[in-house]
Amino acid sequence: MPIQPSAATRYFSGTYAEARAKFLEAAAQSGAAVESFVHPEHRGALGEELATDVALIGAMDAKKILLVTSGTHGPEGFCGSGTQVATLNDDDLLARLQQAGVALLLVHAVNPHGFSHLHRTNEDNIDLNRNHIDFNAPLPVNAAYAEVEPLMLPATWPPTPADDAAVDAYIARHGLPAFRNAVFKGQYTSPDGLFYGGTAPSWSNKTIRSILRKYAAAATHLGWIDVHTGLGPYGHGEKIYPGRNTPEDLALAQSWWGADVFSPFSGDSASADVSGPVVTTAFDECPNARIAPMGLEFGTLPEADMLLRLRADTWLRSHPDAPAAQQREIRTQLRDAFYCDNEEWKGMVLGQTRVVLLQTLQGLRNG
Image: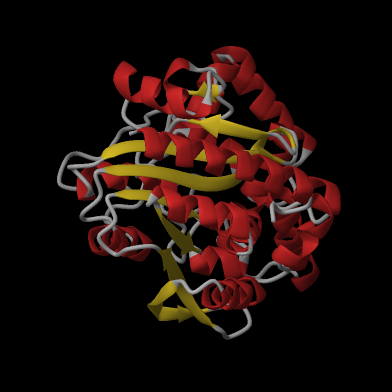
């Protein structure tokens, strides 16, 4: 039976450990083949094992694959995990996939450290959607970031009125688009800063590539949905195109998912044009596949509120001696920024995700 909105809460979790347990249980009950990629160096906030878990329903050598990933940005995994667990419990959808000969590949917690510890970034403060670049080439340059970092990350937290005035003055001088680009695009020079892309492939980068090489090597068609939260109107799932900047690839995505697939390249998306999204690894690791990628982004808070909480998260990394109460508040506010723990929002998420998965199935079926 299709998932009913009233059943939404049971698929979601309050911690990474709970989410992982629910995912693995649902995968086992659905008969999926399961593999766990355990982080070799780090443990979770509760001392638990950290892993990126894979569930495959269908043939290992499937030509057509529907891939859904969660937790690229840590606590965004609360939402993404819920959609994956719901999918594993959706007998109607699973039957449709089987009848079409399409394999379902679920990758749970791309960034398990951030998911567990409630950081958007990974164990090295790397934003994984800025890390999947060619590190043999010169690193991308974001010259404007150096000027905005001290404005975004003041010496004390929360920002003072003078700090806020300095941000307003920058925007007045350069304009809001230039400010957003400087902050959100990504940078490779400040390891303790915002949207840091790293200087080498992260553990999560290497892991997702290993998964693609093992499970999608034979694919001729790949539809990849990477579930995100935080940007856009509350509860709305924006379809963001994160693939190559070519008219043909964008046209393929829009033929599958509709004219409301927005591209950061054209400036009509809630997302900035960033370097190194996770989904771009498919073009490296599955060169013989026709690839349609999507970032499915569910809105939570206004952008200004979201950015303030991300700034607090990044500030806290450099101030581990902050009072315990302040640390708890920042962690809680970040979690709430990426996960609306109420029935209404969860129902909106599951309903829209199911539509996208059905559209992806049709796209894969029709080639």
